[in-house]
Amino acid sequence: MKHSMILLVSAFFLISCQSTTKEASPEKVVHSNEELSLEEFCKLHACRQNKHVKFKTDNGLIDEMLPLYWPAAQGNQISILPGDELLIEAEVLEGNRLGNFKQVAEIQNPEKTIRFSFTQMDSGIGMMLSVKNPFPFNIKYHLNMIDFSGKPHQTSSCPVRANISVYEMWPHPIPELMLTNMHIQKGSDSMACIY
Image (cartoon, rainbow, N blue to C red):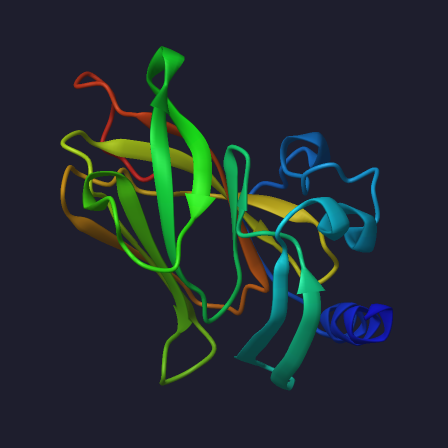
């Protein structure tokens, strides 16, 4: 298991991801219980297994099978890998926050299941994220790109209006997106696409 992870990390180190976005504070975006190794964490939690990750870069194709990887839903954050089509149930928490995320295989509770799709555009190396909001209110979240060296970088995200989808695009490959701080957007909040 460690061998495949090392291959993927090595591939990520060999390819640079250029971004003009501000680098996020490392403590803000971490995998759950990072003091545990991935193998130890996955003994206690349902992790992603045999996850196929495939996307193009300026230096060629990354095509890896991850025998074990962190869960997509990790408490109150969501990890999104290239090729992911995720269904995530969310609960409304105190203070107008959304959390207690739970990945599901099929929609059983459409009123609280958010759809995520993270794909590469056919014509090049650019990436696109689509998010479908099932709630009767607008939602907003923070989005961090994890680069090929594992560092998080803040990127803008657009509010997602009630009961519709939003599409966001980047002109470069992204090995992982980490979504945090999902909350209900107040009527007075800006609809600008910001961090």
